[in-house]
Image (cartoon, rainbow, N blue to C red; front, side, top):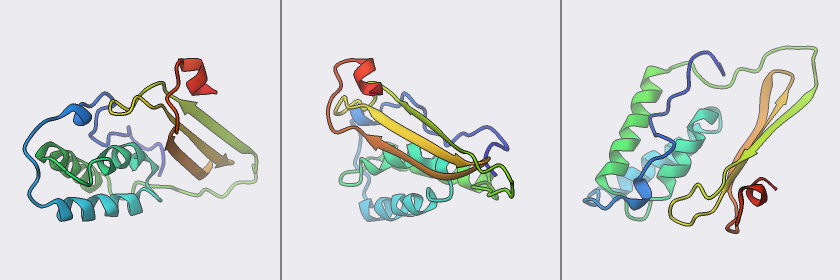
Length: 144
């Protein structure tokens, strides 16, 4: 049920994972499997999208700090059963789209993120977040 309680997937927006230099996680295949399951879950749990996006960037060489963040997402999931997309019956069939982007959000590549959310009535039907292919030289170009 979208919007029932505040969304907290336990990864801060201004995280420092990209610049983290710590001990490598010994079980990288376990990390990869768990992040892969999060990708599958994000189909019905859009609030996981940002966390999954961040965690998936470190599949090749995860560190212990990345594993700890993955466990925090698991704790969030355990504490919020029944959350997810609720398709509500309605006669209002207006399509509404919300889109936004940020400027140079990725600390590794300095590329911007853009995303959108489409609603049919009050029910979400499509969403996407994507790292832009080029580095934007201003915030207005990132929005464009």
